[in-house]
Image (tube, rainbow, N blue to C red; front, side, top):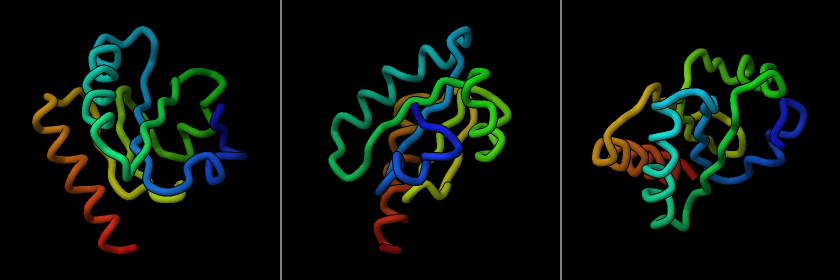
Length: 106
């Protein structure tokens, strides 16, 4: 499990992090969409973090106030943020653009 103490070790490289709650309908709809988008990529990993009492400190550190939230990180540092459910076409374009921006800075 990713925690505030180990997130930098766990989130090496470029990661797309999906933060959701188990009782959130939009969150449940979003994960298959993200899995589909990210299954075509080899330059970033997809990480799921469940927003619950065990991850409260991490959510506060990442300044996550709503679920679902998608973060794009590089070595644990947030580079982009998207809140709420997005259609697959829009989300794919957004993820592609954010990952390419990070890759240009590498």
